[in-house]
Amino acid sequence: MANKSGIRNSSKTALGGIIAALSVTTMFLTAVFTTLSYALPAAAGILLVVVVIDVDKKWAFGVYAATSVLALLVLPNKEAAVMYVFFFGHYPIVKAVLEKRLKGALLWVLKFVIFNASVVLAYVIILYVFQLPFEDMEKYGKWAVWILLAMGNVVFVIYDIALSRLVTLYMLKWRKSFRKLFKF
Image (spheres, rainbow, N blue to C red):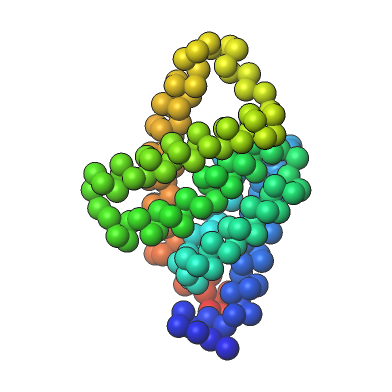
């Protein structure tokens, strides 16, 4: 049965399952490529863009939730799982909502608030719940947290712009082929 998006629930479920499986598999690679503990969860989050665009944001949050639970349960790299849960997984969905409603400086202020709150909360969880060591604190002293957060904000801007360009690329070049492949 098709609904307002024109896509049957069985197709949505299949797409959601594929995206969740690809996301978890992508993040599982952090066990092999430990230096990609942030890049691979970011890539996994980008996969949700397809669900946001071709189904809807509510369905994308469901896929995000399923992927988050699976990541926390099965990934050996808990830092990558936590970064997905607290930022990379929900950000493509939140970004779509924010950009639809806001423009200009207010949009960027809110994006930075979300990023910084998410990252700080993620590291609190990493340090106190999973009790993973934060080696950079000892290496760089009391300024390590502020330096890393500042660098993280720079990388966040690059990530946000790259995500926007990937959405544009998907819409202009890949969407028609994707919809034909999955018979949407």
